[in-house]
Amino acid sequence: MRCKTRTVKIGSCLIGGDNPVVVQSMCSTDTRDVDATIAQIKELEAAGCQIARVAIVDSEAAQAIGKIKAGTTIPLVADIHFDYKLALQSLSAGADALRINPGNIGDRKRVQAVVSACREKNIPIRIGVNSGSLDKQMLQRYGAVCAEAMVESAMENIKILEDMDFREIKISLKASSVKLTLEAYRLMASRVDYPLHIGITEAGTKDRALIKSALGLGMLLNEGIGDTIRVSLTGNPVDEVWAAYEILRNLGLSERGVELISCPTCGRCEIDLIPLAEAVDQAVRHMEQPLKVAVMGCVVNGPGEAREADVGIAGGRGFGLLFRSGEIIKKVPAADMFSELLQEINKLTNNK
Image (tube, rainbow, N blue to C red; front, side, top):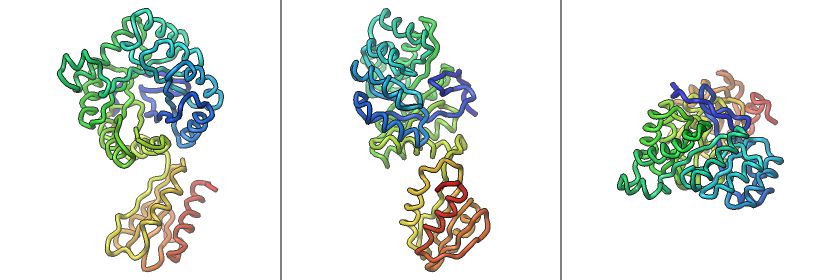
């Protein structure tokens, strides 16, 4: 059961409340390179990304938001540190949300200027606490980075906004440690009803980050914690979107995309299964329609798993049995298994 949170609107996306978990990513392009940023956001959107975040490093980057929005359709979050003027410029250029920490953009007058502009445009603020950049005061108070220090830092920033009667807020508490991330989000979820953006930050290269993210975010989501999600990878952000949906789908929180089942192979496998499974995986990753596909390599578990899938192949000695909706539809030579399986997948997904 999802933790009950209030709803925040970012462009066309509703986050929190009873709304589905929203998938987002962050552009790796230089925001000042408008064409490259638009191209990457379009790739992200095609993969199912619902919100894109961009780094605002200077006035040129802030002013680029208007041009980027003109060439894209999903909501855009401006990521800002220290300079409140960049927040104001980003809002003027059309940002749909801000990612700032009110405590590090200056005195009360500067924070009030940003809050007033957000209130006028009905723009929410994400308070983002990162274990790697926790303020020195918190480190001195607690002696080290810990969940309590991260949550207190967030609570201090929340209070700044609440004292200005501003509550269009969402919160993130990210660490590279799975254990620390879990502790911080669990503590925060027990203290506030603001929607939570969850992620494991600086998680590492693709394979390592996928393991960390699936473990940490999967546990939080299974406990009902998390209203929007980013899987952080050192690599192509499009992979982040695919990974987010894999996590959500395996927890029953999304139906988007193809579920691929394939056996780990053993001495009973009599077809060249690994390249076949990898080829099928790459062919179906872009597909949006819910579908269960099985690529199996032996006569023990293969027929049963293939029969349970929407479409599947069960390998034999140099051949495969092709299943659709639980029935064998044909026997195909090993050399034709990929093309025959893909043809059936395309029929079921109306994919060309």
